[in-house]
Image (cartoon, rainbow, N blue to C red; front, side, top):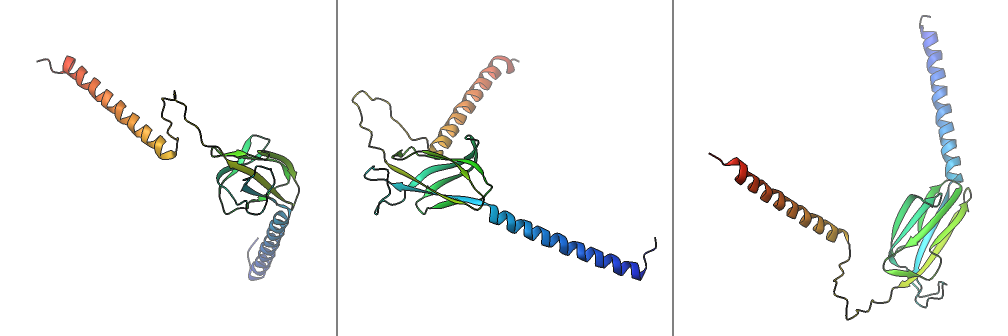
Length: 184
């Protein structure tokens, strides 16, 4: 088939209609998916009186890890609180979810995990109450110094271990060189 100006114009018209149709369908699909998506909004509060109920004056807590999971074990999202909550996990498909809270600094005064089915378009608010852990009392026979395993501490320990291993390998190399390498 030869492409003539008449065929060329018809081909451009069909191509333009197809582009408009695909564009309109993708926008409609995106709007439907957006409307169908749900969200889970989480808040962690300082339950100062440990009564498992949020009351006025009980502010938000920082440094609490929140895991959003499917199938009770597959973490699909995580948030560490910064005191500016509530924080919302958005655009979630309708399905069964588990949200769990944990922190080495606080002890829970409410449930630490929630299992629920999220419906299309639903916003599920969840609140977690916690209170600071009591200060550890030092016993007289506690001889070990406990250093928190923060990221800088772990990096420092790794670097120190690397230096020790390199010094050991260098010393072993010098010994082997002294025994076998310098015989003249």
